[in-house]
Amino acid sequence: MNNVKIPFSFNTIPDKALAWFSENLETLLFISLITIATVLVARTVNNFLIRYYKRASSRLHIDLTTFRMFRHLVVAAVYFIGIVVIIFHIPSLRSLSVALLSGAGLAGIIIGFASQNTLSNIIAGIALAIFQPFRVGDRLTVMNEYGKVTDLNLRHTVILTSDNRRLIIPNSVISSEAIHNWTIEDPAVIWPIDIGISYDSDISLAKKIMVEEARKHPKIMPPHTQEYCVLKPGILKSDILANQLNPSIIHTIDPDFRERGKVKIYLTEFEDSAINLRMHVWFKDRSDAYSAACEIREAIKVRFDNEGVEMPYPYRTIVFKKDSDKGKGSIKAASLEEINIEYAPISRLNVNEDKIKDKTDH
Image (cartoon, rainbow, N blue to C red; front, side, top):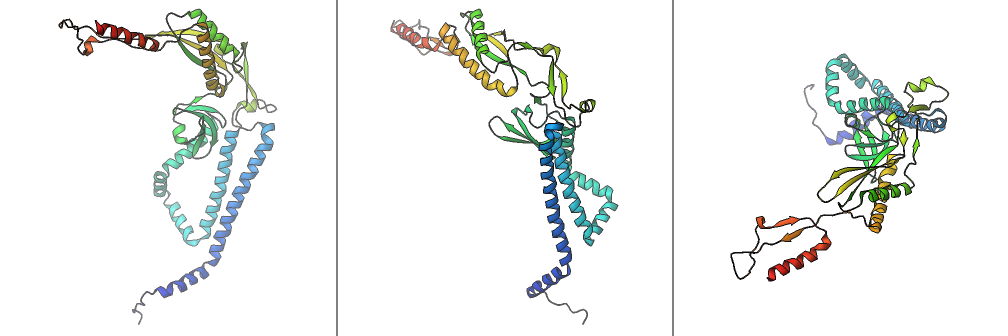
């Protein structure tokens, strides 16, 4: 009788499920309570840290980048503690965790390979928050994209681009990229504006117009000398320990860039149809440079047109050679070797076409 097997029946599933829930009801309630408590505690801690930052940032100058990383770490620690409590309350999971800890070498290798990308992003994120090659709010050019850093968390960095896209870059990737930080230490920037004029134009007049139009723009920095720049370092910087009463520090400007606001123009290149002039102008930060430079180019074009400074553009003149073998004066189709291509203004194309017709009539 002991060897007789009872056939499986779907009718017994509800009874078995009810019996299992009855036996493990206490464990299920505990897991539910711990899960709810963990979520509530994590949200409460997160909201508390946000409110604390808003109150204390004006007085203590707490760095936003370091604070956000610290907040993410605290919230992650709360969730980790909740998971550990649940694991050690369930006997089967507790014995499994003990077995994993006893075989920590093999388990560590397996877990390390499985979570290699995640761990590298976390470690890179912590390193970025400590060493701060950029901070939340800085403007960067990275991976051929320009934008403002809006968030730095344990996994990735979020950059808001100039066309309102969110560029999400893993921390391990951005930490190994070459970054142009436009706002670190000294946000002022020298911006180039390239203008081409014809060989027949007066270079001195062109330079005079370019300088005048640049000076008229309100976002161009006036000529002045600047010795220092006031910065607010992160809470982990050593500079903050030197002056506890005033966390802001004074950063010395590089001697090569203390003279600011001068508009300089250089003749950079002789091209086939143009003389290239490059104008360097100063802006207080990168966010103003692009739009202001576009407005300055438009103003220069209007002045050039009014004062007779030509901005050249390529044109073509096609001349067909007469067939000397035929006395009837017929023109055969010209081969590639028989065509001379030159550059001329588009406005002269009609004149050249008339010349071609005159030649074909003879």
